[in-house]
Length: 337
Ligand code: CP
Image (cartoon, rainbow, N blue to C red; front, side):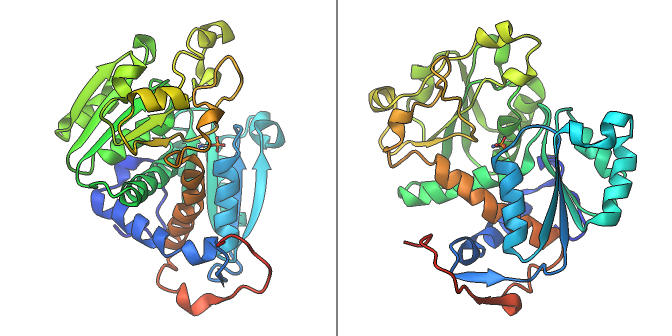
């Protein structure tokens, strides 16, 4: 796939080769992330970071990725800080911001809004999550993590058994992740969700049409068994009509170290896109698992920087120039220790 100048809006744009291209380049970003080397390959470039919905990881890791390649970032956070509240269209906003920046990272609460925005943009737009629809860069970092973690524990990467647990209806990360894993051979999906929060039919069709095995259950202990990976998710309470409705499902699935030991196979890898809801009434992924070496959540969030660096390098066409813009790091860093 020729990435230069492209928007990254949906996993539908990707084939397996394009995913592997991103993963391979992301691996080359490790020395920058670990502060063994620094890069100025995007010196002079500007990223506009437009986040109209709360975010910690996606927003900061997009910025960190751009900075680590030598570029600068300008941010707008929250709808209230934008002229969208004055009735300006996404198209007009995109035209204007394209004049100020070389790339745009955007999150918006409405499904397909980032695509609408991109139709007015003349620089690459990277979707940082559009409502309950998609989160393509999360899926890419999740896929990077899945292969990395399977290799770490010495498991076969050619047959993947994964349980996706929680709010599969509203969780955009699990939509994009199911799409992306469907591009690979021999994936067995187990969808663990209450009936009302089950995976949308259109995503199930993608998995089915790709010939993958699918299991459905509402029971966590059943879903945890015989998996290589378990991907926990939060109840997306911001997508429910009322708090009362969301509260019906919060805390329904809780993975603790005791449950892990009882049901999970040896070296089952635990992932979560984060944020995990650590309030007592939810607590879908217990803090008591923090010492479990197979809890991959913080390696997963760290991989987000490498994957987003790779995407910026590709869409801005500098992926082959990294070495010539590289130098040593002079400041103290304990990241590689
Ligand atoms: N995983 C993820 O999208 O996290 P944030 O909402 O903090 O960006």
